[in-house]
Image (cartoon, rainbow, N blue to C red; front, side):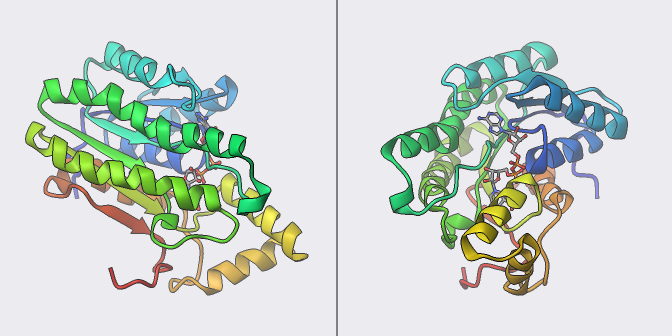
Length: 263
Ligand code: NAD
């Protein structure tokens, strides 16, 4: 199926590894021109090399911390300066730290608000005027299964991603008249470095091994395993593409069936 991504311009934040990198790679393989960012130049350039080796074109790399208030405007400006337009924005950031309510401080909440909520808000502020002027665009916020079903010891993610989801649903309404679709995508357990860290954290707290923790999680997933980043990326690429032209305002779970609610 041709997703119609050839020649589109996409900005994917937090894409030096994990889900962000997998999404950027898939978009590039589908023929999109891609800009990626992360905080550290070395891992970012390594990701760009991998993408170029697989997809042909070299992505634009921009070193940026998305929790920095100045980052969003700079990322959009540099992407448009390089490619002349912005068709697709995928907001992603590193996950907020694990912890229960009493383990975390107000400063932890403030930092997580900047990382998880305000990064997405600011990226939309920067991208929407460009897309409005073009008369088209597609925004995808990466959130988590925690918007449907809170996960143990992840109160920051459980709480703050709902703010992003509320923004997405509202923007879908506000921006539809300008030809801009806005959706979110909610990964379940997908084995990345973030998940390795969460598994180590669980293993230390529960006195078990990482693989015992991973097996317990897999047993609760109808498809019987964690997802692979490329499976998540395939769903994200579809959702931002012209192939999904009548889909806006949704939150797509990519969780192997783990969420048990009816809707
Ligand atoms: P990861 O830790 O493997 O990768 C995160 C990426 O973000 C890296 O490229 C890192 O360099 C970059 N990054 C981190 N902080 C940044 C910042 N402040 N500015 C710019 N770049 C930054 O994580 P992942 O598994 O790929 O997850 C991506 C997002 O999806 C996270 O928010 C995570 O919490 C969420 N999520 C992941 C899963 C999963 O199973 N992997 C499930 C639910 C939600």
